[in-house]
Length: 584
Image 1 (tube, rainbow, N blue to C red):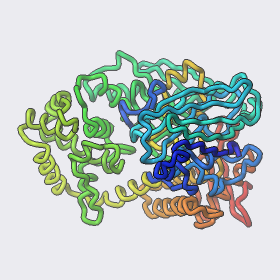
Image 2 (image 1 turned 120 degrees about the vertical axis):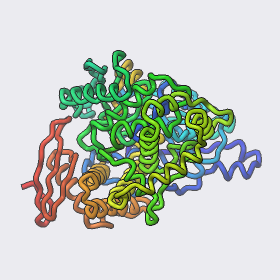
Image 3 (image 1 turned 120 degrees about the horizontal axis):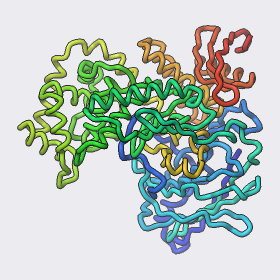
Image 4 (image 1 turned 180 degrees about the vertical axis):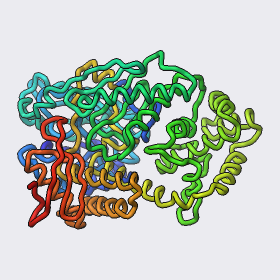
């Protein structure tokens, strides 16, 4: 295990007899498993933002280097989950830490504990004791998770390999605990990671940043051409240009659903992209966001920001018939339609795929009813309301521009949806799309929490480039269990995209069975489902042969695996099942 925890509670409140405060602060001892965009313009945290005491360390689901075929134990997974009465500590880069890393820490407060006027201080026992920093608690990410974040606080360049004791203190409450963290020798880091560095390519539209040794560098020529094409198309749609180049960073790991836009565009590109989205569509979506931010607009409610991007992209993750698909949400056996006012006021808290589809269909409905020019004029002249609600601001702008209220618009929109032909044809596609992405987010929250879109470890990439930091994006949970589950998710996404709904539902059920096993602390979560056993055994066979599986296509007693060896060079492997899965 990489980290061990020695919890040393020194609670002055308890000694003073504050029994209720003690009950709130003392860890209960058993973890609770947490629940489940591509884009969040303006929302992702950056290094400039300053965005429970745990009885066990927060351990990334990465197998120990000494046993690359070991699966994650249920007990180890449990330590990654927030504890109802304790702080959770997450270390970055994820996985093993090496001498030379710039280590960041997320210290997540337990639910319901008020720390508005509190400060976290972290020290590391060395010669002499080193203070890594002090930080107040505040919101992080779209969800506004309450935590203290010490960004790149521990520079280990001059450290020696070995175990280090970190002490955490929250003042004025004087909650104190310690954890032991292991730094491995830099020489043990995989060679391709040691050699990785930021690189840049200038194209017609964009300044593209990427990391060497990754799939992005391997496929850079084709990606750059695609980015230019999507930027040109997006600019034409928005009646603007890209004379001011867009800064775009290609991420070598999946964060969220694959794309974010703030001051620059970030898109994920990797062989094991288990989100299953069409990369050109994600790029187009983010380009719309980037250009939209440059144009006029006082408020730009999220309902229309995201709806516009999906509408202009012709779909969210794939090409979509927006109005007919949204009409299916009203079907009695789904009943998934979301009322517009609450959706406008808390967009990212709603079910992700339904909210994006509904928002895009609304934009399509309004542009077809009043014209693109009329919609754009309305959208650019929405102003903040006194009550701070987006729904109130939209209502005011609607009455000024079109002479009807938000409620009246919704009535007309629903009436139009009910007259859309062919809604039934989209029912299974929508149902399986929602089921798949809910499962994907469940996996992220349980086994890759830094990827979960509402609290993603999405950083200020410009600062990373200035500091020469690549490890935060290169390393992510990659134990065999992660590889197997991500391969299963990838297979499920391909089945949904190909409208093979029976296969998609079977694979999604297998993924959820494994996740249920982890939630219930099963000694062997993969043994719960026969299909999961196959994916697990194929993964182990590929690893034993010296490869890392990226995609697995399973057909009876045969399997095709897209795999990589060192770095991003890929190869297809064929496996057969005899007494075990083998590469002939």
